[in-house]
Image (cartoon, rainbow, N blue to C red; front, side):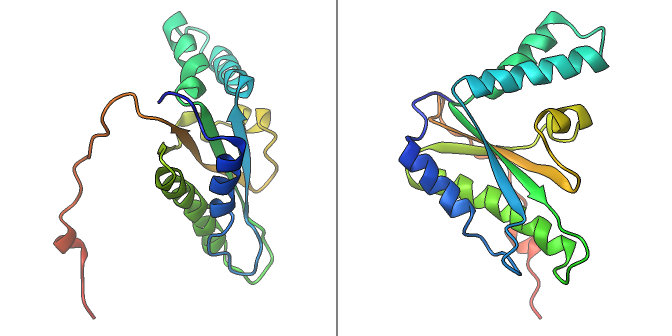
Length: 169
């Protein structure tokens, strides 16, 4: 993806759409981390450091890949799912709400003229990356939303046969 990315007003609109998803109990069981400008490179440095620590034989090409990972789009939004225990709202519903944030922001970005992609990747699950992002107990990455303009035509991927997924009761 290429720039320009969303303006501050457009980014706020995308984030507002993400915050407007179904949320049983009004818990806001998610929060957002915005990676833009040099924050994207700092995230790449974090990923490269973690790879160096955990894979001492990592190739220079692999380290470059990690340093450039968040430079693939002008703006990346990390959606952090934060589940609260010991309340009547099921954990499953809290997690689904964070997923709804991700998809809603993808749709909102497309609706205002951008391309967007919801990607998770290895760093979302690695404890050192999560620590480097300041995630607390009970928090995990639901996804990273990459937003920009396509540099090539968007390709539709193969989808399952819709009729095979439908049952009627």
